[in-house]
Length: 57
Length: 452
Image 1: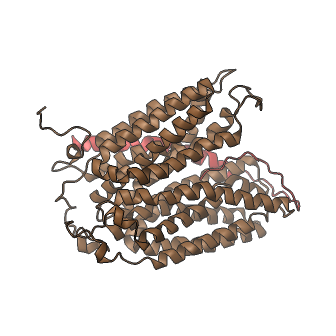
Image 2: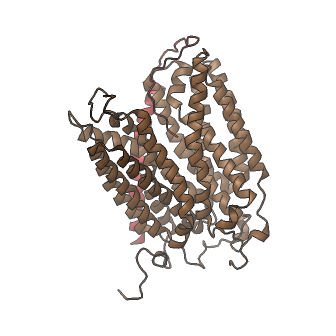
Image 3: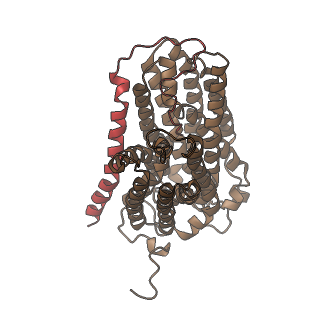
């Protein structure tokens, strides 16, 4: 009984965590797949591609 | 049930019977932490909350502004630290189950109140719901399982707390995409679906957190892992040496660790808070690539919590924090060089390592407290230490934004505007290193004489 509870509880916590990890890996894919050429950065430039990126601690 | 049966929520009712597997306690802790960790993913609601009335086009005369919305997250983090500090002793007294239920009640009712606030467009109710009441739930849920885990794993306290606190890091990985998925499911032509998302999340999180509360157990007073002897761990605070929370926070050791945590968090936020933007500015990559970089850092933030805290069981807490600070400072100083040589992959490796140590700091600090003050009231002491995180999480990003924006305005190229910030981070880490090196075992006069 305790072994069954052990399996069920770990599945219950690892399933959402794995989903989150999989989504995060999916999100990070462009970092490895996009061969974006490095753009020259202008002196004094204050413009960004995505100025509304939220800050996350 | 007999009249003398302890109440289901009481500490007595959670004492494990013979044969209970201690490996059932980490999932209980993770269940709570991965729910409250949702707060890290709150930024996905920023844009939708800013166009509740104006629709796709933000209406500045009626809609909430992004800075106004930003306060929701800030209030929640402040209340996290305050509630952990204020309720720490109650947490120790009441046992983990009652506290986990209280945490679930506060966090999920906070989400429901916020949903009503969004429906009625009452910002004060969102501040009260998600910020104040939800924030109290965060603080209670964060410290509730920590001392319980350390009592179950006296042989591997770092690994045990690392598992729970890894769950908190994982909460962001779940909360952000869950929020986006639910909003896209509920949204209509006139409603971005935020309120319904809050209500649904409240239900889902309540189920998981209450499951954790049902599962959690405390070991009986005479329990210890099979074959384990306290002296074998080399711990500075054996089971007979305990320091009360009221004494602990008056010792220099507590404040040195407060500085250690504050510096580690401030430095980590330097990268995490601006990850996407920094990657774009330094290497001229697209927003998608910048977002991918931020996603990768979240993974290392989570993984580092488990990995580094487990390493601390082998090396000792002081050594592992010295590694965080020394290696961290060295890596921060290398970031401008990676940009100079145009190596994006090296930049990713360096920053990922930095973030893994940022997460590791969170996960290792409870075991450090346990080494110094014993397990007697370590949850309450941890609660008071968390105020360092609250402060760093609020002040750190503001400081970094201010410096990098001022540099850009002064005409410094975008790619170089981060250099001062990065060197500032090195300085913060070196302050943390000094504080860490000054930590000494707590003087025996502070130990509780009657504790056994």
